Structure formats: C-alpha cells, structure tokens
Image 1 (spheres, helix red, strand yellow):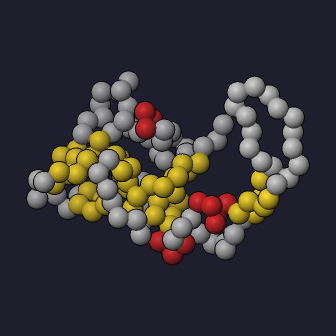
Image 2 (cartoon, rainbow, N blue to C red):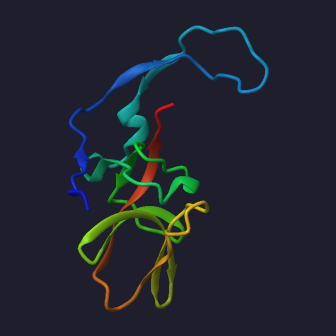
Length: 141
C-alpha cells in the first residue's frame, strides 16, 4: 500500500479563459472569449476540506476513475448512498462506490473485466470511515 498523502490546495485561484460552449455535434464557427474561468472556484466548494489524489490501480475503471486520473475529494460533504468516496478500512485507504445499508456498508469496485476485485463488506469488526466524497475527476486525454 502506498503512503496516503492527499495534496492540499495551495493557491486561492487558478484562472484560465473560458472561450464558450463547444458543440459535440456539428461544427460551429469559433467565438470570442466570453469570460474568465477560475478552476479552483469552479471545482472546490470547501477549500479547507478539499484534497487532490492520483488514482493508483484499476478497480474503478468502469466508474470513470482510471489509473493516473486526479480525483478531487471533499471531506465537508456528507457521504450518501452510492457516492464515490475515499474510505479508510482496517489501516488502509481506497476509493470505491459506497453502498450504505442498515447493517453497515459495502465498498463496490467497478471493473467488470477483472474478477479479482470483489465487494468489501463492512461490519462491526472493521475499523472504517468514509474519509471524503469524490466531487470531480480530472483526466489526461
């Protein structure tokens, strides 16, 4: 298991230029710059409780979390059923989809091609916490 080191946000903002909407259907003429885009303002709602992680592994590829992606995790968001979250279980951290039920929780992988990834049942004997909820994924194309 790799060392658990979330990256804290160091800057108050990061600005780029939002050029406008882009059609994913038929092409359209390019338009002028419409507004400034502050990525931190757009992606981070709770600066003090938001962290970045790099995904290491392939257990969540069918949930659009690919190896090398950056996930943005907010600890201020209340976990909810079927959320993607960074979880602490028995001394280790993982990112999974969380199914909540009366008896506890189940951590669900998302990789249909690899059967080695199985659901993790959380019971009263497990040391468990939902560390934070995944809010965004940043992908390299």
